[in-house]
Length: 265
Image (tube, rainbow, N blue to C red):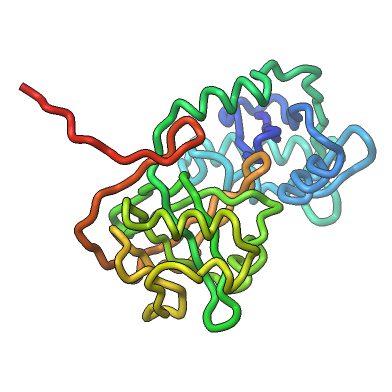
């Protein structure tokens, strides 16, 4: 059984039905990020070990609750107890295994590839009155229809992040050809009311700024946030939607483009 602390921010359980060993595999990452990851699963026990709660391992496993898996898992914990590897809180001692290299593409290669990915453009907003904030995203995506959820990514240093997490809600406003001024202002103006100088903005039913002529607006409650690399995935449950007829725009190759229907035969 192996807990994997990825340098993307995800924590997974590998080989969850292998009960003759338990360790924590660590991808190359900064000391600060590593300590944050360890704090999510347990606590340090010297330089080379951590303490893990059995409940964390159960939570990470897809097999928890199955009778055979539970029997083998309890036997593993019992064996650890017999060897003195459990502390007075019942947490098991696990060895840290450090992966020396993680071969990935360069940041410039990554950005070149992402510039080739067309994506819709949306204004994510939150706050009300003098506390309104917002940003442009091209990462808005559908997640689930039941319950209805959408998500987007916000950089962990984003000027909107703290307000988003504090308010616990946001509006996602899908932009179209009529909203070039909105896009330009959001990208150039300082964070705050100045970004709402262009466009027909109104306070929605859930106290978030809504663009009244957006292709679609979705008022959402934040139900999940998850750090992944330099960004946070922010997921919202949709409480209200509104739609209008307009032509969409997409972000492609570092520019905004209109769409032209493709003739099919």
